[in-house]
Image 1 (tube, rainbow, N blue to C red):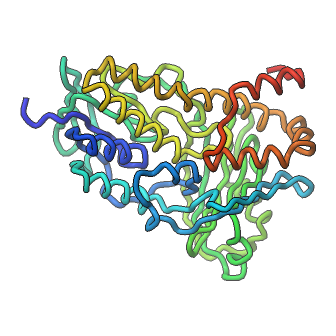
Image 2: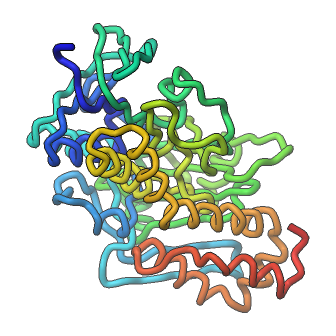
Image 3: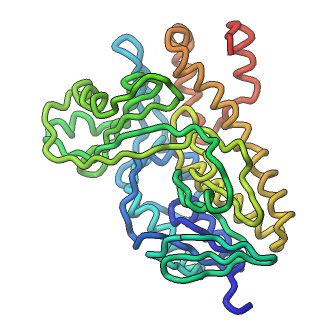
Length: 380
């Protein structure tokens, strides 16, 4: 068949664009399908931790608004921690610029960009899949579904919903120069400002990204708009000169029904790879996109072998981390009193360790949760 691509990557966020870059760099004929026209706004706090930044195959400096080598984590007036590093712990990006930069790097390697094309159906044939879009059909031997939390591709390929979907509300706000100066010194996380979640204040070049999210299943009725107003008061923001609200959901647990069906490989939020505790998803999105691409390259376009390689790569580090993180999230968000007792004694060490994870110098230890559960006789 003429004009058949080796791989079609659906979604041009960090995961999809990074996968497309890696595929084309290794000589595979790749098309990147995006439903909107780039650059496009993407709802996201925009915090890119150093472990992701350090693994980028090219510089993303031009897409970074500001870098922070200091992070503040606040629980209440009597329990807070500040950590510092020589390298930036977290860099602030606007996703329209950041995502487009990665896409342009992929295009420079030879990726074909097919934008303003909404995927409407998948027709699976023996050796390829026909992807029906609003702009016409694309044929590909492999598909990488990197189209985010609401992944239409995953639904079309037969996945059900087995992830934990966490609601969040983010505002891009402009405040007075005095207020901005007061808050611009560091990235800030306020734990428990939302039931089973936190609020964040991320300074950008000339405004603030302020948001609230709940990151564990709860039967309690949430009112994130009210939580946001409470959080503004906590931050000392008395007047907002301008604001833009964006609601979204973050998958904070991996899918339970696998990550590959037929020739479709899920990555990033489509797979549920955001960190269960912090809900940070950019670094794992990029990592999983690269893994899927490398698995396809190394398999020499053999679907069965590519699936085996992808799962092997995921199981080497990412999935064990997420499994441990999911269990720790139950302690962190679900056992508030016990957590605070532990933090009053071990909080400084915990904050430094968490920062080391952000930096990519440590991972969630496989046996950590088991040891805590054993020593404290936890009921879960």
